[in-house]
Image 1 (spheres, rainbow, N blue to C red):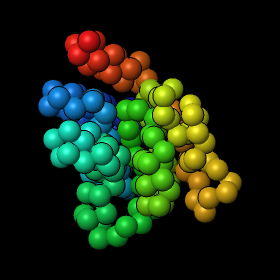
Image 2: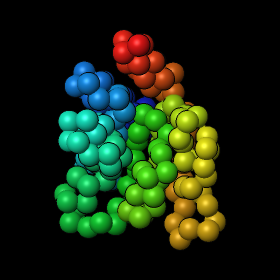
Image 3: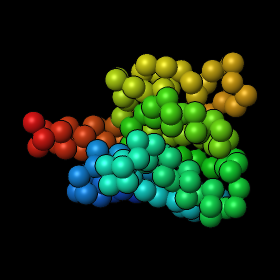
Length: 149
């Protein structure tokens, strides 16, 4: 749990940086052998890329860094429950474990709207720890959207 907290705080810092850049403040960190191998945040607006969610950004970076599209034995920390697209990428990358902060009632693909990450119909299942520092992540998102209304 102490390591999970440390890595989630890094993801929250990435989310804050994305928010400051005008992006929806969602951050992610991918860890392998207790070392951060990729970190980033949403950049869909800056990149004009609807797939540039924080999870996809770090999966792409980690795959390049490790020279492999399979990212087994890794843990992904993300500040918001992944959407269906990101859950699919997590499955395809064979990420072993996901730790996320806040639930996403409008699109979450672990338990809020869908149960993709644990579906017995798929060829890979992910160990998931939800709700770590959920209030911190939710506060970031609420503050971000409050300034835009």
